[in-house]
Length: 239
Image (cartoon, rainbow, N blue to C red; front, top):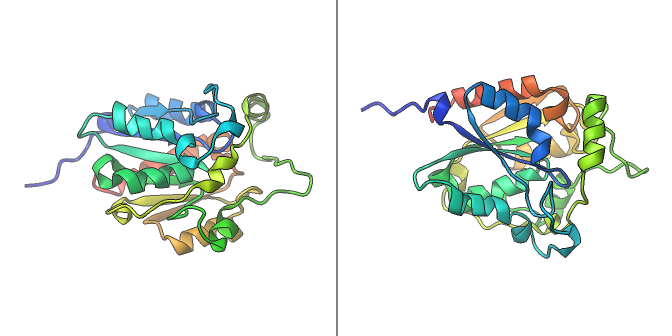
């Protein structure tokens, strides 16, 4: 008996923002996905977007990531699977779910200029590979992001919770069975592709790697190419 091929209408993407961002940052990619027939969920993690929590009150990564875990536990039907897409620190949230839910709830996972550390921040090597490159002046610029999106970002960004660096994960029973795709951002001053992105890819190899000529925010600077890579990767795996 041949395996059932899941139609576009049944594919469900869950987009997970990075530190300080919120569900709002995905508005371009969400529009492209939904107008193409996909189901899309964007949510705010604790202290992000419109969530009222103060970032300084978060004591653990589990607390920060609780909205995503609650989504899996309470909002998904029993036999429903999703495709996770995590940006920047959102990669930690994605990895957490891979260990917790594995192939039972996750078709595949995308890391977009994201932290892809199998066990989180445990060793010195994890911190070296997963922590961003911060400039001396302390301000990150995104040279390839349209000015209107840069202004939007400056208006909506919130404090980055220190609890993020407390992320540590225990291997799930089938974590390595979830197909993972990494999308490298080649002009990224924040999580540099040669120093950090490549190191994480080498240590926990994904099934596919794409390179996109953008800064750290491809969902702003080139959402069409980002969308194309995601669709291409999904089509290459018999879900």
